[in-house]
Length: 196
Image (tube, rainbow, N blue to C red):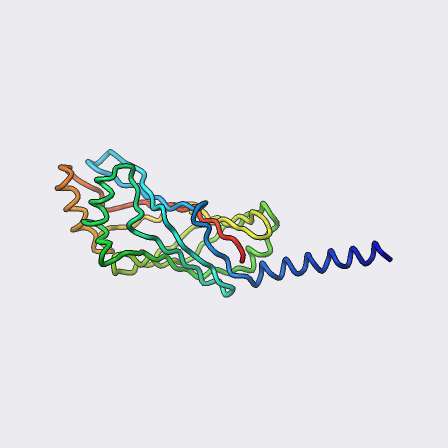
């Protein structure tokens, strides 16, 4: 009798936990997540840079948002970061960028811990007052019953002209005394979401 009661209680707890993660909103773990981009100057010198402050959420209907604080750009060179904030991103006017997508959460919720699922879905990038759609190839991994990870299988290649960033890049080029800065910028992400 005791064992049957204990098993029943344990089973109910498991079901409650599964129901919670299926119904819960998922929030981005900004400390564990990373969004980086590669800039290329003088035709053959490429450097990896990143944004340090990210916020995000996937609601119970699968609406996903990742917000990037543009003043958190980090290239490892403070003067360059300041120039990017002012000349390129114009953070006083455009302090954030936003990535949005619609995700079907059912396959992710059905994954066992450690299992993976490839996703191909449209995403929209809102940057510098402009929007542009992309098709993203992503890999979702269920880490445990309360966390999943999404990584880009292929970088999104952002073209500066789509977001009116070409004049800012030209200003940066002149300030740095460079012959060229590429308008095409590959962007990659590792995003970890936790159920609440």
